[in-house]
Length: 338
Image (cartoon, rainbow, N blue to C red; front, top):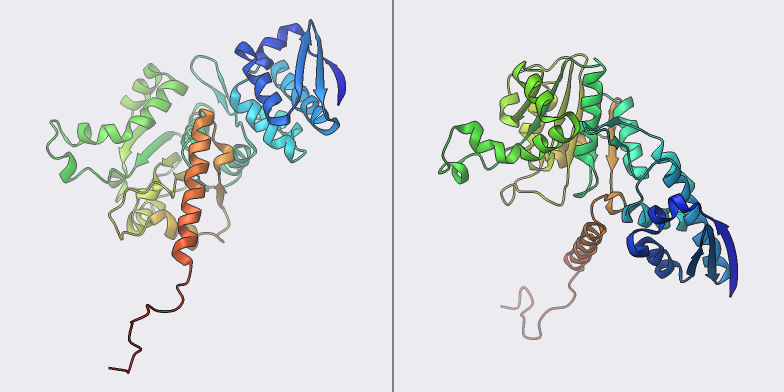
């Protein structure tokens, strides 16, 4: 057992250690160390390697706190994971990447290396596919990039679309016109717009036709020039819908296509347009693909564990399906013996 000392300013300690020291306890439990605080002096007790690792994690969190961040459980978990790969300093580099601010002034930044790569690819490619599980920020970051481009006059309008695959029989009994029946499927896009841009600014620009939120079917027959276009929930497109959408793109436009291949709502046996596009377009210059994973989940840490559990379950199910069956039942006849 060894002890080491480090200094953390009191102004940052509550932020770094968390309410009721929940972050400090997480570090202690993960690395099997004890962390004691007396004023600004922090004592770390444990085996040599874990103590060194704990100090590296705390130093990274101090850097994040010094940059004005509120330290969350996600920050702590991700820093611990990056520390295991000796890349914890990249957490601070990621934090320097600012996309834009919400209407309340909150900065929107990538929070993981996968998210940073996603933002970089959006900046450098005309078309980007953001593929990954729920909670990885695929749509939210794309929306932030679209609004930032719109505010900077890089594009003249924003178009947000989703396949409303249940706009037929299942919604037919609901009151209202087609738009009011489809709106529930577009609600996540509205929510992100309100948070980043503000409801008043959205309403104003929407009335002028500068921001459009519409089901994918409304894209047919159009040419979309000088626009930032986001196709959300692309795993629910058919191959024909995906081809139709991709061939709408005009000059001066940027396109982000997001999807989660594990959450398809297509009828049984229907091939996803996203799966086909990934194969067809993988080698075309100007099209980028970013595959986010459970490591990039930035919602509640429980969501990350749920995604990981499902990934493990589906992997095991796949192994069972692929496992060859040898032999035959005892009384089964051989072909030709009848």
